[in-house]
Length: 172
Image (cartoon, rainbow, N blue to C red; front, side):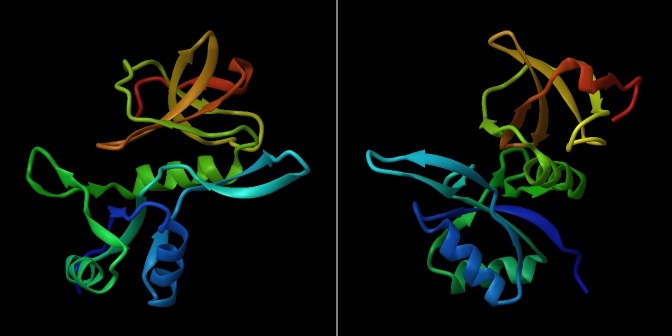
């Protein structure tokens, strides 16, 4: 059987949640990065699930299934392409695991940016709900943040007190 890989697939605007539900109903492993947030209207506040990376869903499949998804799911427009190889971009399992861990256990809002950041020190979170997460220490607007890179997509970042971190010596 062919190996399964994580792919970033493009979804029509505002179709992310329905597409994730359809893929799940088809028995296809997928991940839609969502985050709970509170929205304020003039008369009330409400908790809602917000898509973190608009128009992107992550799908774990083999090549044959990926092509079937493109043919049979009309809300999916295509697969992110690796500019170097001109083939569908494969996201490493370790990157996806760190990204999902960050989103699942963070108390703070996770931000996503495709801005190129200069590499900083490699760190591991040693306290709090993200304990064990490995990433990169960056500073934005004077605040310490832990960044997890997803090649070709950018970085997911969460604010983190420096006291919760320890430097990793010469490790990935």
